[in-house]
Amino acid sequence: MKFGDHLCLPYDNDLVRRSVLASFVADGLTAGEKIVYVSDGGEPDAVLDWLRAEPGAASADLDGAAADGRLVIVPAASAYLSTGRFDPDEVVAMFGNHLEMAMLQQHAGLRLTCEKTFSLRGWPGSERFAEFEEKIEAVFRSAPVNAMALCQYDTRWFGRRSLEHLLGVHESGNVRADDVYDDGVLRISPLFLPPGLSLHGTVEESTFQALAAALERLGERTDLLCLDLADVDFCDMAGLRVMLDARTSPRGRERQLMLREVPEPIVELIHAAGWGGMPGIHVEEA
Image (cartoon, rainbow, N blue to C red; front, side):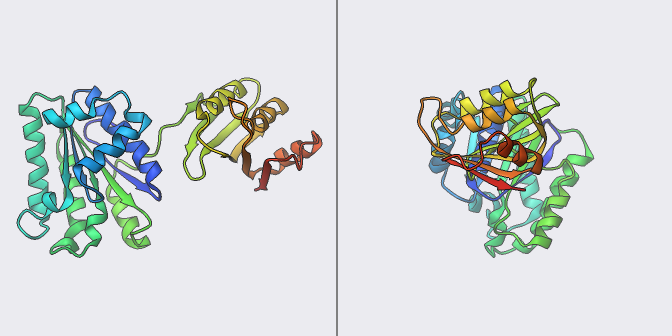
């Protein structure tokens, strides 16, 4: 992300959300920016607790940042209902004040992130929530600002039509968890539920070592490992062997391996090699 971005994080499980936000917060602190986190799902101490537990924030001094004001965690009710009802203009002005304060405190800029489920609580004035998002977008489009905003939308709670409109307001687009690897031939993305990796592109001589390294970094975290192959264009025998070897963890522990959305050519390769029906491996054909 960069200054001027007003982006959206649509998610359907908290593992994805927390992974993205841990990086968002840690990167901002590293860059000398102030972080304002508006939470609708927990008090400030609870937010700090789960941020501390995320690998993406392991290098950040979260407690120090919270103590000296570089990281400010505000409950949604305090941020949005200071006058007893939700008023888009007042909230936009409040965020402007946060930016002004960040610059006066000689921070490089402001990172703002908000949990948006508060808009479904029926608070007075919350029927104007879409208007608020449109006004925030207009602020970012009207002039350069040393700020960026990441809006969190739990897609399990919002209706399809309203969600489509709200996501569409964010002209900068959506964010997702960082890729594990991408060389233009093979892209490896994290999976959270179930845990594992999603592969996109070609698995062959030039890329299978990168896949092996990504699998090793998963370590011992799970007894079930999922590899989603829906977007794999080609896989040779060496690449397939790396995948199947993943049923044994780096420390030698046996675990279940699920190959999900496997394209037909790879299914045929599995059977040709005599690996069909191997114990501990489940193949779900595309």
